[in-house]
Image (cartoon, rainbow, N blue to C red; front, side, top):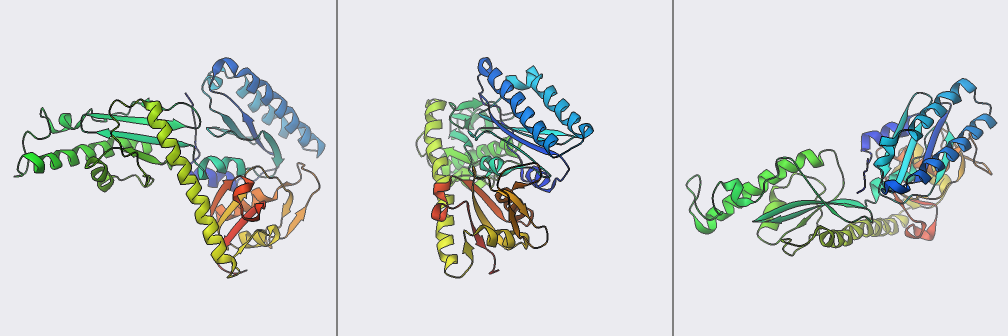
Length: 373
């Protein structure tokens, strides 16, 4: 199975705001197959050497470099850590701290050294989810299934999740009696099924609290509509698997759920394209890096699409947003597009990391502005 740590919005905001003399951002490919993980550990050692070389090249003091090396080597030697991995690993290191995220996405390997973190690849895991949960809901059967990237879906054990509707009602079946003066039969059944849905929703809060992945329902009526009316999780998917999930294997439900997740991601890109087209005629949409950098600096970007793999080295002025380009990556510059994305997040805008083909004009980035600038 995949072991993931999807960053929360507060965690991303904290990483965006971090500044320092020597900040290292590392992304490398990993695998949930423990017997093959040594290749990733070896590659991390090589990337660490690359980062140290960049720091030495610009004259960073040894007393600053040594704590970074020590933390990364400690991580390399942590057998327990490497036993539980996903498809990619993001590592953010300062002389005082190390933070890692195990991600379901297949991210491009990179090492970035600057006075701030390189976060654009990390945003892909947040803005274009490949991670979702399926609630396989039936009167006599209930399961929660986790979908992680391209791995087979797996059933989860969720504390306090009811077994079925009858166990919640405390009767042999949900038609047996009524409560609060209700009649039996159909009216009593609706009462018991709503009670069943409320207990499910309460049990799922512990699993889903603070998360943003889609929750996909697999159910038929009337349970499908009943659960929607009671659900408190804000990321319940509009689309559902509308066949009975009873006796359908988890991997089959996962295959159907993956189609829904792909549709959610495609809809997000399509909605942006429609909005971009409308705002372009108003002077409130652009793919020009210089203009977007200025708009991001002044909090004028509402939504930004970025190519998750593109790196444009340079600097962005803190006050004016003016860009200074560099010919090559180094420890004295950073990724301009990544910096623009960070400023959009810091000012309450939305950033979606996608492939270049999904961006208007196949540019490095595209922005919809709150107002003309």
